Length: 334
Image (tube, rainbow, N blue to C red):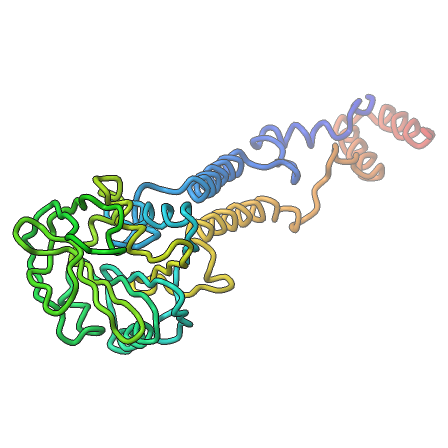
C-alpha cells in the first residue's frame, strides 16, 4: 500500500465538511464596505450642504438672514455701493464702537440696559444709530427712556415731507408691510408721512450724534427692499457714502466664536461620521491582532506519526509479510 498523494488532503477535506476554511485576515466582510459607503455619503452631503448653504433662514432683521424678514440684501447693497459692512458679534458692553460708523440695531431679541447705555453714549459722542423694529416699546426704553407713541396699524405707503433733507434724499415713496408706525413725532423730525399722519421713521440729534427710530423694519428687509424707493431709503439711512455700517448681531444670538467653537455644526457632523467609519475599519482589521493564521496549505504531519499510523493499519490486516515489506520500504525511502 502506498502513501496518499497529498498527505494534507484529509485535513482540507475535514475543514470543508465543517463549513469551509476560515476567512483570511486580509479580507474584509461586505458589511464593512456598506458601512463605509454610507459614511462617505453622509460626509459628502454635509460638506456639500456647507458649501452651497441651506434654504433661507436666520433671525428677524439680521444681516445674516436670507429669509424674507432678514437684512442680507440690504447689507449686500451697502457693500456694493462702497460702504464697509461689519457684523458685530461682540456684546455691546465689551465692543469697541467707532463714532465714524453707523450702528444698526433692528428687532433685537434682547437689549440689556447696559447695552442701551452703551448705545446712548455712542450717539452722544457723535455716532449714528438706526434702531427699532416691530416691538420698539419693548427695546427702545433701554436707549430712550420715553419713546414716542407707536401704533400697530399703519399704512403701507409713505411719502417724504417737504424739506426732509438727506434722510430721504432721492426717495419718492417708501413701501412698508404696514406692521407699525409712530403715531406722533413727539419732539422728533418725521422725514416720512403716511396718509393718516403717522411715520415709519423719526430722527433726532442727541449730543453730537443722530438717532433714527424705525417703527417697522420691513422696508429694509429682503421682502420689500426692491419695492418702490426702499433701496434708496436704505442707502440714505446708512449715512454718508463710504461710511462704515455695523450690524449688531450679538442682539440676535450670534456670539463670539474662537478656535474649535468657530467650526460650523455641519463640520462636526462630518467629523463624527468619519470617526465612526474609522472605528468600523479598525474593528474589521482587528483580526490581525489575534492568533496567526497560515496563508497557504497546512504542512504535512510529522513522518514518524505517519509511519506509526501505517504500521497500525497493516497490523490489523494480520498479514505480517506485507507489514514487514511496507515498513522496510518506508525505512529505505529517502
